[in-house]
Amino acid sequence: MLVLGVESSCDESALALVNEEGILASVMATQIDIHALFGGVVPELASREHARLMPLLFDELWRRAGWEDDPEAGWAGVDCIAVTRGPGLLGSLLVGVAFAKALAFARGIPLIGVNHLNAHLLVAGLEKKLEFPALGVLVSGGHTHLYRMDGPAEMDVLGRTLDDAAGEACDKFAKMAGLPYPGGALLDALGRRGKADANLFPRPYTHNDNLDFSFSGLKTAGATWLERHPEARFPMGKSPAKERLDSASSLLCDAAASYLLAVAETLVIKARRALSVFRPRSLVVAGGVAANSVVRRVFRELAEQEGLELHVPSPALCTDNGVMVAWNGLLLARAGYRHTLELSAIPRGQAIPFDWLRDEIRPCAQTKA
Ligand code: KG4
Ligand code: ZN
Image (cartoon, rainbow, N blue to C red; front, side):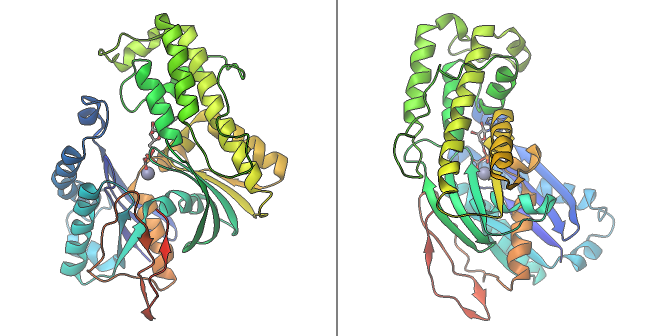
C-alpha cells in the first residue's frame, strides 16, 4: 500500500510517499527563518507559507519519486492520502487538510486524518518493527505526553505536562541565553561541548507520585541562573548567527549540558514510574526533543536497565515530517479506517474524535489532545 502524507500542523510543510518497504520520497520546507525574526511562530504567517509551499513541494515530491515525466503513472500507485488533522495551529492545519481533501476528491482516493502526536510515536515502527503494548514518551515543542500504546489506533494518555512542554522549556532557556528561535537543537550543540553538573538545575515536579510533568520550575531556575551569569549570555536582541555560536563561553556550554540533563532525567523519572503501572514490550521516545543527544542517551540507559526494546526514530524523523503522517495513515488504512471529505481540523487543546469510517461509523469516542 502506498500512502501520500501531508503535514502542516506548525511551521514545517512536508509531504512524503511511504509504503510497507519504507520511504519512496520525502520533501520538507521549514519556515524557521521567517518565524525566527519574531522569536516564535506567527500563526498567520505560517498558514500563508503552507499555502504557498504545498504545490511547490508536491511538484518536488513527484520529481523525487521519478514521476515528473508521467505524473498519471505515479497517481495510479497511490492508495490513500493521509493528513495531519491536529493538534496544531488551526490555520496551518486547515491548509494541509484542504490540500489533502482536494487531492483525494480530484483523484477519487480515500482520505485519512491522522493525529500528529500518534504519528510522532508510530513512525518509530517504520525503522524497526514495534511490539505492543509499548510505553510512549512524546516530547515535542508543544507536548510532553506519556502513553500506553496498544496499537496504532489504541493510545491512552497516562500523563502530560501541566504547563510548558519539554521542547518549550529548551527553546525558552535558549532564547533567554540570546540564541535564535527555535533554540533546542542549538542548545544540544552547545551542551555537547560542555560538562553537565547534575546539581545545577532541579528535576521539576518529580516529588509526587503522578505521571504528569511541569517544566515551569526548571524554566525559572534557568532564568535565575542566566540573570546571575550575564557574561554567559549572547547580547539580547541580537541573536547570534549560527557560526558565531562557536564563540559561546564554556560557562554557557556547561549550563546547556546541565539544563538538558535536567530535562532528560525528569522525563526518565516519570517514564520509570509509568513502568510500574504497566509492563510494556517496548519503549518509544519520539517528537522533536527525542533528537536531543542527552535524551537519547538517558533513555538508552533506561531501556538497558529495564531490559526493554528501545525505539527512537532517527533524528530527521523526530522533528515534524511528512513520513510519519504517511506511515500512520498506512497503518490505519491497512486496518480498514478512513475518513470522508467532511474531515475536520482540530486545534491544539481540543479532543481529537475517533470519527473514522470502518465498515460502519464508529461511535465518536474522544481522546484528549
Ligand atoms: O516535534 P517537533 O518538530 O514539533 C512539534 O510538534 O512541536 O518539535 C519541535 C521541538 C522544538 O522545541 C525544538 O527546539 C525541539 O523540538 N528540538 C530539540 C532538538 N531538535 C529539536 N530540542 C533539543 N535538542 C534537539 N536536538
Ligand atoms: Zn510535531
